[in-house]
Length: 110
Length: 114
Image 1 (tube, rainbow over the protein chains, first blue to last red):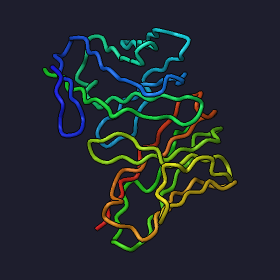
Image 2 (image 1 turned 120 degrees about the vertical axis):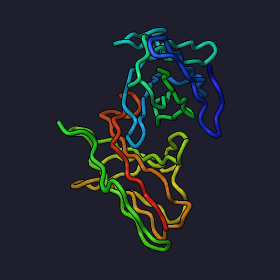
Image 3 (image 1 turned 135 degrees about the vertical axis):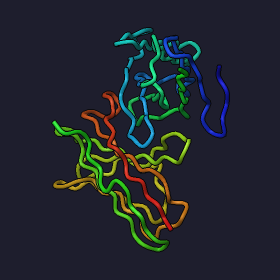
């Protein structure tokens, strides 16, 4: 289930289940979006990106969905594995800098 | 092809000292961004630089913080007269084009102010 921690919301899923991490972005003019994964003590690592002329993009075990009408971005992870445990950030760009969302901690339960 | 290199990995300073954080972007990248991250929080934009130019420093505190990206050498984030509230992880990222290509991040510098 999903819960709000002191700072980061946490999503707990069973190993093997699918995970869906959501992100609301702020600027309707944003035209490029990225999902990053950050493991403890490490820098953010690129997962997948999508431009505003697309609604969906698939990678290996990951899918990003973009709903421009409600300014919503989601990351779907298929068959979640223990190695997927991390904090996930969405980032939006509108031709200037990238603005990062607050992040969601994904916890994979055995 | 080396990624974004940051050093030092950990930096300990006493209050009032200076901290210098270094970042070498990926080969071929001319855009450098600095972000600050507190524990259990997101990444806060500080400054965006191109070679020899500060393009956007809207996220930088007005005092004690400065950044540069010289023609030769790494980008430097400098914090003068550090205070305990400066303790954080500082991440550098680089890209080939501003805002239209993904950012590649370094491993960060963890600054601890005693």
